[in-house]
Length: 152
Image (cartoon, rainbow, N blue to C red):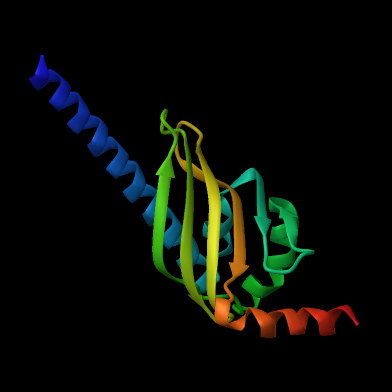
């Protein structure tokens, strides 16, 4: 009985690792699609009802709105090139939903991406992605001064 339990736990652990590896590859490919200005590959990964939350307070986009915003950048090959430094993926118990957080090297400096993915039976898709610029604790005071100037 103990051997059966060990085998079951081992198989479950391997399945989780495989799902995490698949999600990590999907996210790496997604970021690379942006860097390559590959519009189709970039947006195929976002669910039809997906949301993208950018660094500006006004940047709350449905997939369609985000596509409209991004289209000229992709057409002109003037896209962004984010490089993940680290990423942590979490899976729901039924392995049909995942969430993650990642730290990225970007032209804006360090950023954090976080998001939710759902498995539709055939593939993982991004349902929500949130990009935030990271501000070190030592620089919070300067950051708050910038915000105060913007409000004027």
